[in-house]
Length: 280
Ligand code: FES
Image (cartoon, rainbow, N blue to C red; front, side):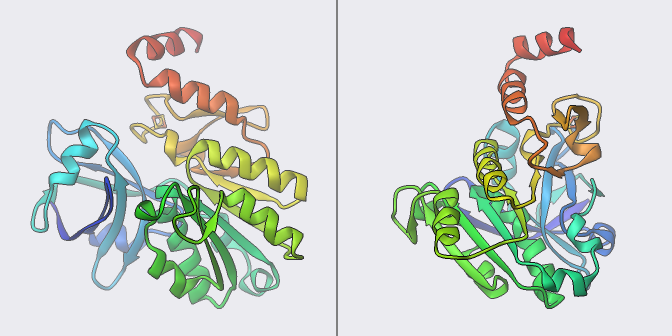
């Protein structure tokens, strides 16, 4: 069993948990994910690793309640435990394989949307710990849904916070903020965008126009995380890929977002799932 050693409500329907899982904490890298299961009847839930403490043997996960399984998870308290906590899974972020001295020469930007801030945080923290500067644009619909602002302030070189309704920070979306920075003369060599699919689609549209290579994390489309259910099937550069096995990170300018979003919507209904099976 994997006990919860800390539980915090970060915002409406968004929770953070530190879970004791020493083996996962020992080997995980930023960009990877875990699959959790509450008990025998519970569904498998894939979640990107938000932070890890190798000494304490803990993994931090952040999740939003979006259905029955995550609702059940939100009821768990400190001292309760997960039956399964499998990982680390997926490929680590490409950035951590690059030469540190080369990385230090790059101007790196992260764009995080909503709960996508959680998987962005360990990458920014890792870069900060290795002396690599990077800017972060993080946004949400409204002030009350912003998460990890203080933690991100500690590790980002420049942090730009946006809200769609203007209740905190820059009034607008991450793409508006990026355009404004660009117009003011800021330049970036590399961008990582993580958040809702629609947000990643528009960030990629803009960064393509601006000529900034962009990596996206397709974890929002994962369901069982095993390569078996087919939910995370997507087209990247004309080839079929599975987010949970081949990703979750991909070249954002090569991802067919419209196909992935259509598929994600279809996957939500039983009828849609049957249709997808017939098409494959
Ligand atoms: Fe099921 Fe990838 S999440 S195949």
